[in-house]
Amino acid sequence: MLDSSTHLLEQPVLLAGHSRTVSDLNQEPDHRTKPQGSASVTTPIDAINKCIRDIEQASLAAVGQSLPSRDDISLEALQEQLTSAVQEIGHLIDPISTAARGEAAQLGHKVTQLASYFEPLIVASVGLASKLTDHQQQMNILDQTKTLSESALQMLYAAKEGGGNPKAAHTHDAIAEAAQLMKEAVDDIMVTLNEAASEGGMVGGMVESIAEAIGRLDEGTPPEPDGSFVDYQTTMVKFSKAIAITAQEMMTKSVTCPEELGGLASQVTVDYSQLAHQGRLAASTAEPEEVGTDLPYHVPTHSF
Image (cartoon, rainbow, N blue to C red; front, side, top):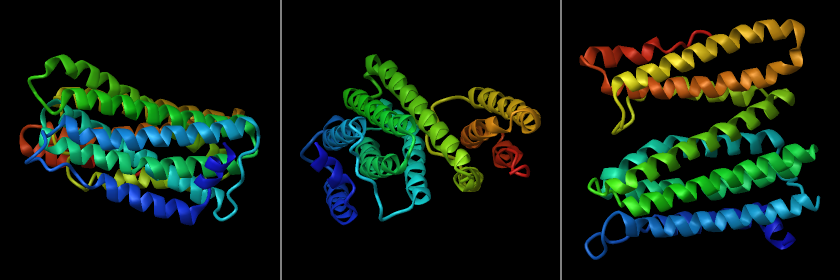
């Protein structure tokens, strides 16, 4: 049990293994001899299954309080690595959902891309947990990482069933449900990470997350939105109101309960990232085109 956990914490071996994993994952099936869609999901499923086994071994070590600490890297660096991996995974949820329901040629590439982030996710999660002194926080990070991995596995199984076939309508509800579970898992772990950053005085991660969301507003719209402009506009209004309410609460708590500011700041970070993402989706579905071009600039950035 401990050998497996220790292996996760040995960076040179880890990087070599990760390189092989990514290399293997990038070897897409030859679509001339194998069907597109379903077949290309098998290798990523195997990769994420392995990651789940690894996080389970680390969790067992943590329960026994025998998880060896990573001494070759700082807590802040591990937190940044984990945050980056979670965000990249989150950004792939909608593209995979879209591909699984009607873009067989894109499905293999998208799921391979998703799977490539999971070994770095597990490594950073185990490393971060190993450096936390609070046992409950340690277990929260590991449990939420496992939940995210399991939700991704469910998403890949649903995507494999759909195979990118628009006529396989009986699979589309399962794909949508799996996507929603993944989004919730991403949000949960981001809240935990941001709260830990705030409690430790490390607000850089939250600032960086907001800055990245702002930067993405200038990147153009994400491909193939699967909702309507009204859907995205409604969601933008919801997140904008949530941010305004939380900001007002932060002003009050700064005087009455400053110890609660970390959690509130974390929630603003998560909500703003969602607002920016929905703004890009809204821009891609807006009519006339001029409205879509201007829309991202109406997502507030001056307060950050």
